[in-house]
Length: 164
Image (cartoon, rainbow, N blue to C red; front, side, top):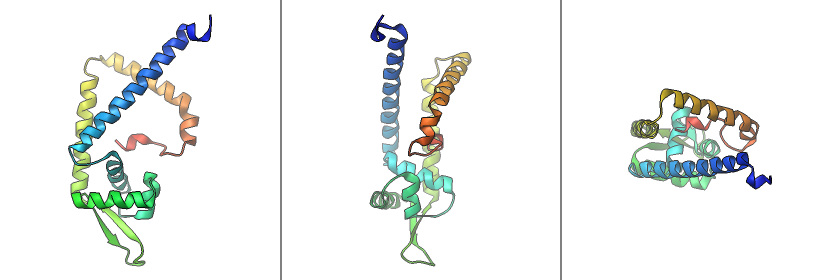
């Protein structure tokens, strides 16, 4: 039996294909949700990064945290200021430094997006039993553990769950 005819190979290929579709659909739905708040995913991730820092961050640090270049972060922050979600101020010790602070409206939009996301996940899994969910969680954990060395060596946050 050749590799392409192996049932395991076919099943893994189908799982990979469906996982890709699931990720794409999730990204699309998330972008649609954010658009109702006049946000893009990079803008939302910038808000969440500020939320997790719980204090003003310099533009340079914000660029590093969000894995964006300084010019991109400047544009993102400009749009977030117009929406009233963040504020920007010059550093007292060094006027060349610019700091960004999450405003209460930004905190509220994060809470609202998270609530809608939670409801979307609840609806998506409504047909599954608790046993199904437990088994799905076990399987996903097993796959993630197999990928853990690659995930840790990649140039991205070590815990992407904090974004949502």
